[in-house]
Image (tube, rainbow, N blue to C red; front, side):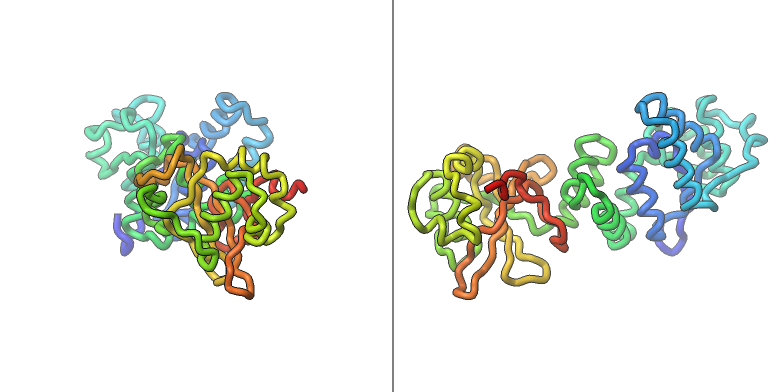
Length: 330
């Protein structure tokens, strides 16, 4: 696959059933990485699977299929039945290969690779690709287009995944595209700190830095101290008055050694917290490791203070951050 010749790609029903994978594949297509194709039988199989296997109401399943048809009216391939008799794939999937041949497709994206043996596809110049492999190819050819597709999804989602990290985590956990998830995470979320603080070195506690303010504030919270510095280190001291509550929540969390600055506002930065039984050095495994985020803000006096505790990586634009649900209960 190369960017100078955009391929025509037949999407099998099995890769269109998972909502996130469906969305990602079609968003990547919308950015010009490939021309998507399907047949009426593929869409009918999609609808039946949504209703029969996933128990999605029939009207919702039909609406989803119709939305795909309306968004991509030129994706449907018809008049391919005459090709089917000469094919040697699994009988139930011959319509997929037939539509690919009739549509001039060189690639079939499917999770059922064993149904499409090389010997049956090769005479027609067609290859079967797993969606994980196909998305990795798209990432290699045009990473900017893939990033736009990812960001478009997270910006439109009202429920998780609402960040790049959450999207890649979902693809990895579902095993729909684990290699793509790992590579894209490393490429598009490069600003994650690489280690937690080593107990052999004194942690920074200078509140004139975001990390120093976070380390000092966290230590005082966990100790459940009445030290007045807790209030002075907080944007809204009332939010953190229940010391026992916050000590219980944060007792096993430790700050990372790095800071993520806000993209456009220099007075806001984020410190990531990792679950840990103590201060230990360990590499971050971003697709697997849970984390919290402390949002810090710099005051006019030059000191940084804790503003919020986030349960997931803040969005790049920080328009609607996901904040710890009990943080504003006071």
